[in-house]
Image 1: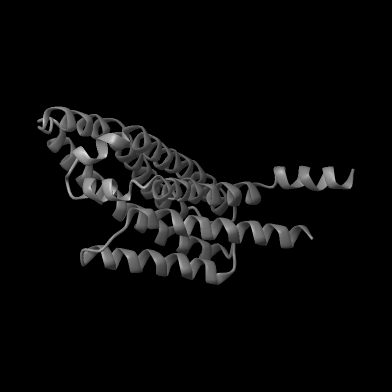
Image 2 (image 1 turned 120 degrees about the vertical axis):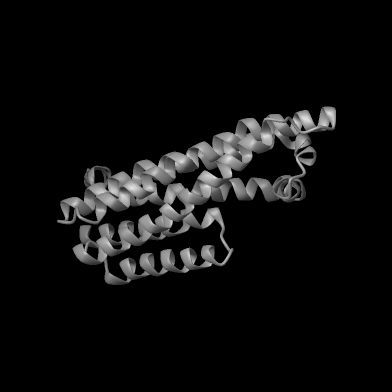
Amino acid sequence: MRVAQNVSRTVQNPNQITGFLLVSCFALPLLALVILIASGAISAFSAGLQGSLAEKAPYAGLFRLLNLLWTVGWVLQLMVFGLLARLLMRAGDDSLAVPAFIAVFVAGIVGVLHGTFHMSVETWASLQTAQTGNTPAAYEPLRIWVGSAFRIAYVLALLGTIGFGWSLLRTRFLAPWAGWTMIGWGIFWLASYLVGAGLPAILFIMPAVIGITLLIDSSEKAV
């Protein structure tokens, strides 16, 4: 009976729910990476990054799955940042939590578009290129447009990360190190992007760190 009551309290605790979902956001891209490595399709993936679509054609089904996991990860992160913003607003901060969520929301929508493009259009283009030897004419303009939109989304996501970190500091919702870490992470990768370095997957790492922190903090308070 006591175990059931503890489980019930855990399920009803919004902090723990948000923390669990934040960690889950990172689990999906991580699973995609594990599948990519295990499948032996890394060379085809690298070739695709360099513009060689034909090499991805034999792995069309695999890349659809990987981009589906990537897309679902964006959808989940979009929803969970909404929950985090709500918790911060309840803690007394709406002047930073709301703008930070708007930045992350826009970035999330573009992230879903980015994943959907690679899951559908790029996979189709790779099959067509392998069959005909020619890349479909519509592919390149779409790729450039989606890529440009995602670069803007990348910056917005990092700005949102900084905003959420600042909000964590103002509300003292978590230990100060969590807010400072989030701010430092956002500033570091934003500066890296400005000098030409960037990695989309890093957008999922800091939410997972905050998620783990939320789970630990909630568990300690429940004891």
